[in-house]
Image: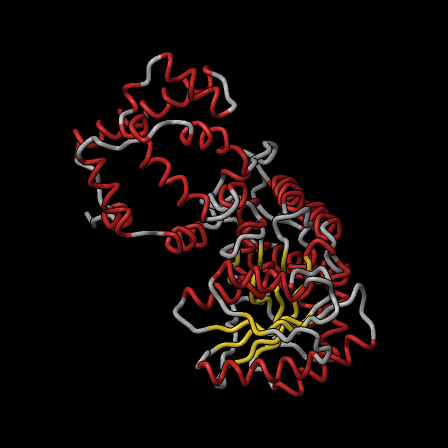
Amino acid sequence: MFDNLNTRLDRALKTLKGQGRITDINVAQTVKEIRRALVDADVNFKVAKTVTDKILEEALGQKVLISVKPGELLTKIVFDELVRLMGSEKVDVVLKGDPAVILLSGLQGSGKTTFASKLANFYKRSGRQVLLVAADVYRPAAIEQLKVMGQSVGVDVYSEEGVTDPVGIAQRGVQHARQLGRKIVIVDTAGRLAVDEAMMDEITRMKTALSPSETLFVVDSMTGQDAVNTAKAFNDRINFDGVVLTKLDGDSRGGAALSVRSVVEKPIKFISTGEKPDQLDIFYPDRMAQRILGMGDVISLVERAQQVYDEEEAKRIEAKIRKNQFDINDFMSQLEQLKKMGSIKDLVGMIPGVSKMLKDIEISDDAFKPIEAMMRSMTPFERENPDVMNGGRRKRIAAGSGTTVQQVNAFLTQFDEMRKMMRKMNQMQGSPSISQKFAPAPKR
């Protein structure tokens, strides 16, 4: 996401290095390159022009402080303008009513059904009781798809087989939720391949019948500028409350994220990546601007870690590290926790500076598969006692995991080095607890 835009903006901002002052001469070319980068990222041309005009107006004549380089100052100006463009602050979903109804709208293929299950999981994990309603009666297997996804996150799905009245299904679904005491109802609706009158009429009637507390427009960010045009068409008819950008982990140039807020004047509320139930994030304009400019997003990284954090497991691992008993079973457990946080490439992009260093390196989520295969090919005894690995055992593990003996040797060597490092930490000061790791440094 935003890889090309990030590279282009970084290149443009570097042109001011070595200058003592931002002037109309040295800033003109930089702003021109920024505009080109935005347009190339499929940002609406009028939006791109407005943004760069404001950047130019803000930058011209600014004195550069001794401790701040011109490129850094302009980066701050660009950052502030990107944040403003995307809405300045996060906007929460409104949950009112008993139950609160969230109506999803959008074209076919935008990712509504997947997002519906992710949103249900999002609210369920916060302790709310949720019901999904399958109101897409046209797309083959749409109801079954939602049932499968609902089951994967432990949320019930209301559906009616053989009924072709989506408005009636949705109304009865809300009544069913009320009888069950569910506090949130998420209604998955039908889409079309393109905007047409039949779809617009149906979603309009559904909104009128349900009076939802929140209507969200779900859009595939990979469609670029078309996403913005579709959002405008939907907003003109149903006046939705917020936008959801899906498939941001794909080959997205980012134009939709940067344009939609300005064009339809409605906030982006969620961004979705991947197919896993937990790959959903609240949209923060400042965090997104940081990622666009290659500054990382440490806050979101920590929040993802907190979502999968298991306090009891952490205490168990900590105790084993203190006793120098950390084994391959423990390593497998930690690897599973890491995988729950999302795609490796996405996580790397949240670490300041790392995304730029690795921008030309392909990072695959399959990178851990050979290691996992090796660990699963070991016996329970071998995982608990890695030191017993002789040549025969290593050969058997390689054959069972589809790897080579050299790969098994390399993994075991790296694991041994990691355990040695843990022992040194214990000898120096003991293994710090989780709270100690994140505690603020003492004042001197």
